Image (cartoon, rainbow, N blue to C red; front, side):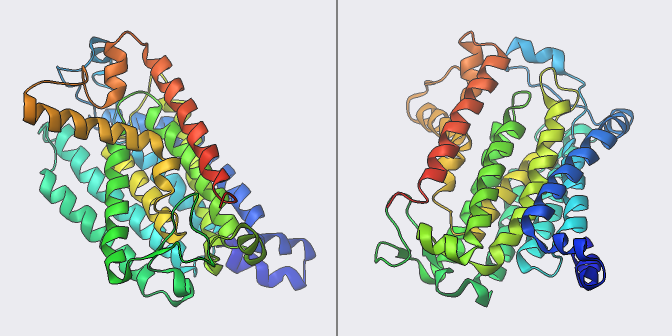
Length: 365
């Protein structure tokens, strides 16, 4: 909104030219989202508590989690509200990527909200049927990917997959999936959405990891949108990708603000309202900036959590035995004697290391 209202006025008031710069708007998008969460957080948490949106703790979980029963859930509405409000103020609202990101945020948040509502209010522990939830996720992901696929500004890079440490723009090391990239992109988004959902099991773990990944993707998005820098780093230049940084900054600011309330002991949980949407957003951004495979490194914590569940379920079906004491793996560490705070901080450290490795791939060829 500010971009459209104030930039045309720079010929009358010179300092308004600042609003045309992505870096300036990204900074204030982060600050706006952070303040939104801090100012309205307690009010929304109280509202959720009054409406009986409370978390149900599964009986088979660690004993330490039983004290969390009754903690308000659906806190994702705080995060998503902050992201959308800040993006509306500071983004270029005509940028196709921002339109797709804000739409996907709203739609995936609605799916998660419905799931949380069924669990908390209708008292159905399993929430929305898994196949139905997956259907809506796939539908939203496919719609977003198709819009990107037919966006001419992506040029020759749309269907190409870049392999970290190997690919460069002027080489034959790229994998061109052709029309099958549509499926690949949708799987990336849906997989990321569910991976964050699985990670959301300890106070601060998922939102802290989302913060780390969002900052990393924000840096890469900005560089991808700068032609000289993209050419120097030998990464694909996507002209409109820089504007994504403003949205990501809002995501990072909202995540940091929510961590204030979600750190141990949590005053509120994000619920599927937050986790499904945030995971989907991360996957969608990776698809937009052609870093689908890099997301496996940068979002390595989410990958580890998801793989631990796949291994646990698969091995149990084959051998009727469990490899981990409990999956996802963060519960295994808890049951092995680690405190919740230690598990969270150590996984954050792993996430930061993986994020740094991911950034380093920009110049390692």
